[in-house]
Length: 186
Image 1: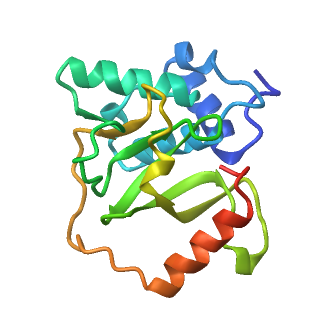
Image 2 (image 1 turned 90 degrees about the horizontal axis):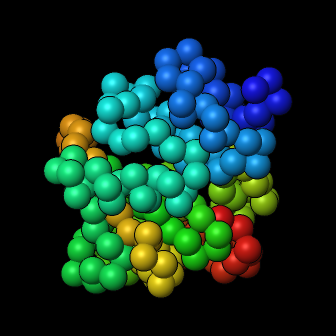
């Protein structure tokens, strides 16, 4: 698989799974969603690699999360459950524009605050695709009408020493404006 995994996370995914469990490496292609590889990377590097089944496809990741939750490992929250308030450490799966995944840092009534790979930077920095950035997402971004859209709360310890995520309205507005200017970007 020498030509597979063009991103840092894709390369890590290939190297890690070729050395540890090659059954996961077979799914890697050059155009694979490295947002998914980055979630697996973050959990593995934080000592929580067993919290999810590794995934390189957002669809496979969501299906694995649903299956894991139905087997008592973690909790799945369908995007259709409008009463669920996403929490820090949840993994989101969205199919609003293809497929995208990342980690929730916090949420409020209208938005989720995330960290994601393979996403654009803030508008003030110019458009920079394929990077890791924080994002402010309207909750409707997750609810795309796809049965695999939702949030997975893995069985991991999340350091909640600072559970109040406070983001200024200026930051929220700048991130929302940059997203509205480029709706085609994950």
